[in-house]
Length: 138
Image (tube, rainbow, N blue to C red; front, side):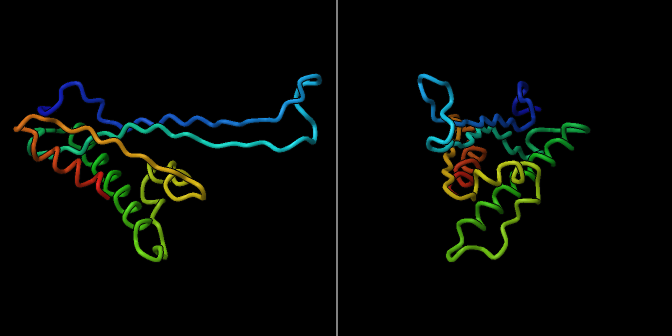
């Protein structure tokens, strides 16, 4: 696009499932000793939301930008619902593939979520930086 010629225009999710099994050093895995511990680590690179007027996206890029913006909006809706006092009666995980895949990481028992936001120090990018920080503040 006009704003970022190297953009992949997609989200990227890497999920690592980790399992710790108790081991009896003499006989391999310990049968009946303790129990397995496990967890999942999701590393997610979200595509940035771009104003289509500023990015001059056309055709397929315009369609991709719309899909990206809808999935980011769905993620914001889920974060808002999870943050409501007293808990929301319904959390809209199924509104996008992104939120559905990350359901256990966003609101599952014992989940922890960390968001890193990348912003630009350039004065010309102040609107995009402000939008990114507003999204991250949710």
